[in-house]
Length: 435
Ligand code: HEM
Image (tube, rainbow, N blue to C red):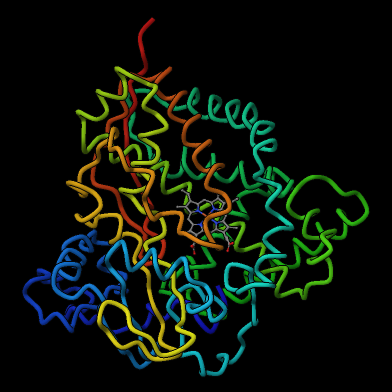
């Protein structure tokens, strides 16, 4: 989430040998060393599964080197991912959490120098995380539950019947944006700005896209900072129990630089938005793809919490996190050099047949679904995991109370990113329960 790392995937040549319009070849038709897991097309065209299947079987610790990013490794097996994620002493987050420029590269011209606690090691990480973690403490979640339910009901009650509409925009984005506005106590009428800044943070610049250049990103994020600086001034005078007040008054965060403030805001905006949004859409899609699982859920709504964990495994809303090796070391028999970037592919670990049987299938009674990697491990383990699960549980309790069916009308369109594994459009039709 800083510009030394931002989107090194965007300008990468497609190492699967495919130009913009050439179809992506089968994973088994190219030399294994040419597989480039960060190629965003593998994700937007939903071809990543077979590529990672091959890597897990033939080359589980996979090396790439590109002009932009330098040397980097892809971990594809559950046990290697968990081991690296749990070991912050040897594998640092301080150089960034997505694939970026080599660690000794200079900041690109015009870079803002944003920093955030997910991309820090102890002690900075720990004190900044501690400042905001109360927002998702068990008591706080209990207090939020009725508001989340009320909003969920309002949105579900307003859905048109018998008409195709986009689930992503109408339900997933609406619900997660409202949640974010609550966490920040952000002016409700301006809440769509939060979704926009969330999208801008990881968007790959392209003509007609969310942003067209790095300069666009910079301008948009500076607007975000300006808006939140005004909020901070307000909260300094009138503190509440929201995230802005926590950062403004916290002993370890009150004097942070504007770019550290912006970084932490973006972390909380993206963390609370893209991930849960894509889980909501994924649950609809997955339960359509596996209709016998949907029938099982309808017959026994007590399975909702298990279904939620299983969807989070199956989808893996953040496909990977990056670390940087602090010293020369060995992983899976491969020699890693100090400064090498290491991508922990949660999406692949979650499909590892050594841990999850028939891992490509959705099984809402899977006994070990909760062992998924989607929230990470160790000191950076997702702070908002309980909140995301709560939002999902409520959504499905209210769906089952109202609808007989939610039918997907066409294949979804997917996010052009190898980091955010999500959906941009999911056309559906709903049928309400009679009587
Ligand atoms: C299904 C939904 C979600 C998924 C899949 C998800 C995933 C993740 C992952 C993979 C990490 C990094 C873990 C690591 O490096 O070991 C993370 C960290 C984080 N997440 Fe989430 N997240 C979700 C929802 C949320 C929500 C709702 C919030 C907002 C409150 C949130 C806030 C954070 C924060 C603040 C961090 C940084 C933690 C740290 O560095 O100590 N996440 N999340």
